[in-house]
Image (cartoon, rainbow, N blue to C red; front, top):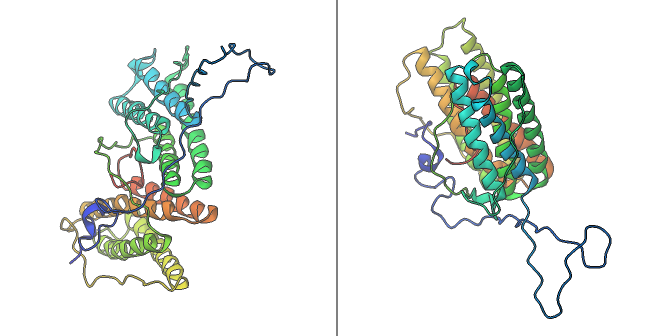
Length: 344
């Protein structure tokens, strides 16, 4: 019996799905380019004269624009928490803004590191951003401002993900999905839950065929899980109608990925004879929790496909799938994630 709700790191005992602890090759991201000063005697800003025989001073390293933008979002969230409208914040809003302050600072440091694909916790130089002037703006206006900036950041990361390759594409894609979810959360009538900080783990870089094989294996389990959940949801409920629609979408996706593998003359993983949910599914509440867990745990498998994509079109397709998977998980009550699509 296969546990359809176990995290990817342990789900497949016979093959470590995300390559944790295995010697799987990874792509190294490009190091940050230093800022170059004008040569003496050229137009532009004046440069100090160089004494003959003396070594030229090393140029100061620059902070990537994406890291500065993430830090600006962290600073804005912090300013709302401590600003003139802090007394108007609900407990849930404070929790969300604290989460955004912390995760954007985490993102900024990772992007400023020499190799963002390792998501480092320190970087030199450290990204910085000036505190915003919130003035007399209402809380609603300030939250809308933050949501707009989150949406703009999501768009910027989507462009970067399409242009990048390997794990660098997954870094940008993960941050695009994260910012997209944060923008939605800021405009939601019910503030969604947030995830706790987790230990960082390395991600594997598989071939596109291997990544799709892992995804197909998981989609078989998801189809089974939806069938089980639908049987426990009230027939006339909106949750059941949504689950039926999502089951149909999952089957279409499964057919598409199987067709890809067949086109590459690759082995297609078969469905297991049976799947065992981590917890019994006896009620509508159990069914909702099952679907929520399946969709949330599916994200890292889609992340594998994004990292393995061989061209811009495949990356856009995988990023769209990662975004929709994240949105589906949150629609069932899954918490916001710091790094969607990673094995954390």
